[in-house]
Image (cartoon, rainbow, N blue to C red; front, top):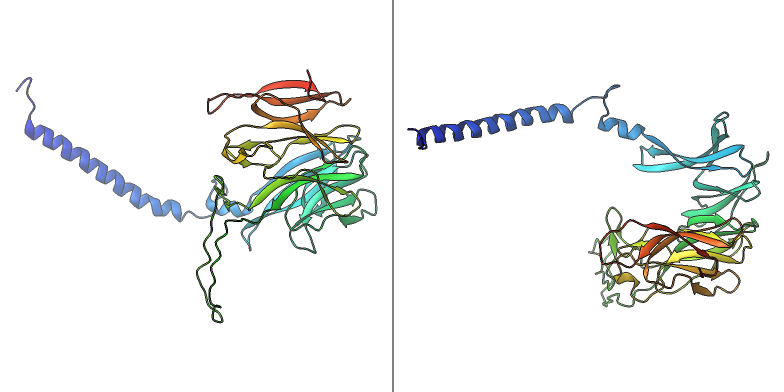
Length: 334
């Protein structure tokens, strides 16, 4: 039979392969419940360990270099969510202790205070707090926001706090239909949602808030926030139309803030475009510093205020490109 296929041998080999596959699948099916029902173990990482996980983040060194504050997170087993607290320790790791509930701590320029974000009393939700780091440790709630703050920073003189938050916008395309009043305790289907934006939801988050992220300042000892940027665009480096926080920096004189973003009418339709802007704190006037189209982001001011370092690259049609490091004068020249 040399040179010819043996039909019986071929069928036998095929049958044996199928049988081996069935046996392997059966073995996995028998083993699977054993893995799923695995009990708590001191030597293996099991699902049960998830509720015991803790994490630390965002260490901040005091201006004098002697103290470190940082965020410490743990899982609230009753409500299935992460909670956060701020801890403090000496720079050598000694005297590690709880300080206050909250997260995202940042030192004031003189090191006498920290600003942080924590649940507010009125209204509910994330608010900005300031805590004095002296023996008394007085704490004050600085904001009364209806939307949570982010990207918190101090002004160079310590008199102001800057932050970003979503500015809600009423969607003109919201579909309204006159409906009869619902009977008591009725569970009617929610009304329809109409969207005109390309990016209206995110993985792991669901529908996005209808509005745009803008920059604000508020007196560090409390008061009404003042909005510095406005319009149908968001501050922050956007990836495929979605913004994840905002990188910005104050000039040492406290008169100007340099931000990243895309103040263009078609920002929702761009992939990786971004510009660097200078915002006048007193007048809210905004000036574009990067004239060439590209993906420009992460501005950082030099200590003397004369230069701006930033990252990015000129516009390309590729879907990905490694960023380069750039530097320019504070007025956008050079």
